[in-house]
Image (tube, rainbow, N blue to C red; front, top):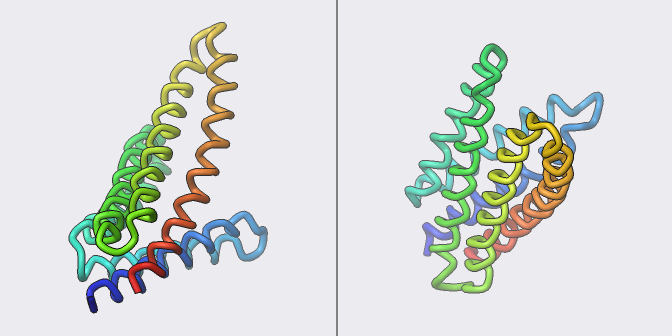
Length: 172
């Protein structure tokens, strides 16, 4: 059970990092909050990763995403790769957590399995719409679909944050 406590603390750190990320739009402190968000999330994944392999993989991929973000400054085409790796990180966190929760909170476990699928669907939809945006006449429909996918993505992000909080409490 002590491993669950460590995972719980790590997930709470990821939750706090996600909350900090919400406020990165603020003019004066946004940059500082963005850096703090990344550091807190990485620390949380590292902590949880000491107990479970899925979090360790999410940590390693998150570190790789930082280097990829720097490379994107020079090669903007890497954005799709970043999105895919970001989805793998989300998958690792959600599925690893859901597997742990199966033993103590089945409802939250199922929630985690649903959250990553919602986010995956939105990511795929947005990628397809971005490609279709270059096709005449189809582009209007693609833009409308992308707007819907963005709204659903925001809902998915909120569900992910709530899932992290619930999972952290359930694993205590």
